[in-house]
Amino acid sequence: MLKYIYENFDVFKLIFCHSAGTEYEHYFDELAETEEKYYREFVKQFSRRENMVSDFFVHVICRTGWSYIYEVISHDLSYDEAQIFMKSIREFCFAGWGKVLGQNYEDLGL
Image (cartoon, rainbow, N blue to C red; front, side):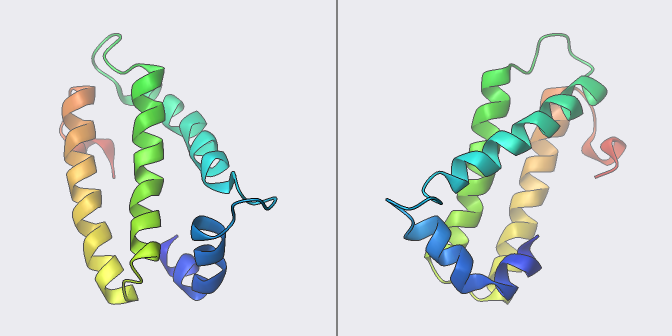
């Protein structure tokens, strides 16, 4: 995903940072909503803790995930900088998901 974004960096910068008043104004929200559907299935499949992960939790996590991408784009990080940053975020999030779901993140196959 990151490679695709950087191959189309100017387009994503326009959409994420300068789309107010256009048909793409809510694109960020639409991406997060789409991702929420998949994360809810992920939680159902992998959670070992009953009622531990609410729909609101999933909603916030998905929006936060796209916020990382927004920050990378809005701060004009180079592709190499973005890869390093996103690797740290991925490891941080996988460890957090493992804890919340009651498993070691390596067991999730991520």
